Length: 386
Image 1 (cartoon, rainbow, N blue to C red):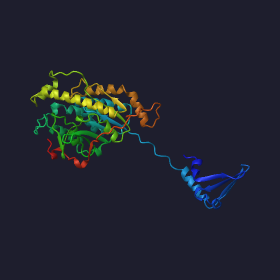
Image 2: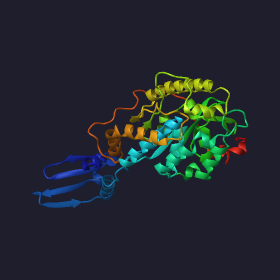
Image 3: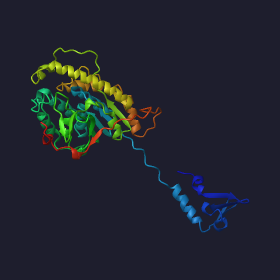
Image 4: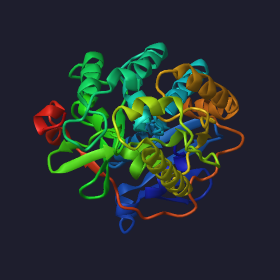
């Protein structure tokens, strides 16, 4: 509330003799005698007010300034950014378990690839056990079918059928939380953020791992896995209005690489002639994505960065999500103190130690393309996707 002295800045206050204060409006300082009011004090016990024609106006103005409503409380929003990682993405479920246990309010959620799938399912209201079951349903042995387009090893048909059984014709507007998933346009080479329109085509696009799944046509774009350019979309969470961001990074930074056959290779061998070449390409892509993610985190650091050690989980192993769940649970619990600090901040508590600025300087960047519902087909087959 402003003080009376501040409210009376419009007035010129002078003193004439003992016991008298003269109030003269600023607009009439050249002719004070016309508007002069005198307040007489008799031994500080008796107050006599002699009003002139402008006194009522002055009192009204002062009241308005003193009774001005307080500004609305600051809106505080926490965003959650989930990275890609295929089968490693089950670690996101363990992180979400800790977030629920600590009662951390999540105001918006974004994700890439497997992180995008978890983000949409969570925003759609699926419980964590149900999301684990979706991973099992997505195992290669359940969804594998040849790709008639010739642009991928495994076609989209069974994945699409499963997603429509789970989500129907839901759109992003139907979700319980603001949500976005990230894809890559192979035509323009730009990052594409999908946060409007039907969710199933968006999920097919954000999880279209190159060579494994065919890209998804969207109008004049050809969308593939968002991890190609932005595997951990912290910047997207900030763009959507989050003041604080929790990020879950599933980079595979393990040193060393082997071409020895793994459990998944026998299955992949049914659908391609060169599984070892595919393994080399996958390793190269993961290294590129890890380096790009590190650079992005330097530009747009989150407030809490959770990095579960998921090197023991194969990217294509979605059949045992309980492994990733346990790893994510442990990694998030190690940062419980930082997560609780975010909850206190979100609830308006003044922290003794304030978080450091996320970025010391402004980084210029090319903004991602935002795709509206008018660009999304109702179903991917309408655009020729299998």
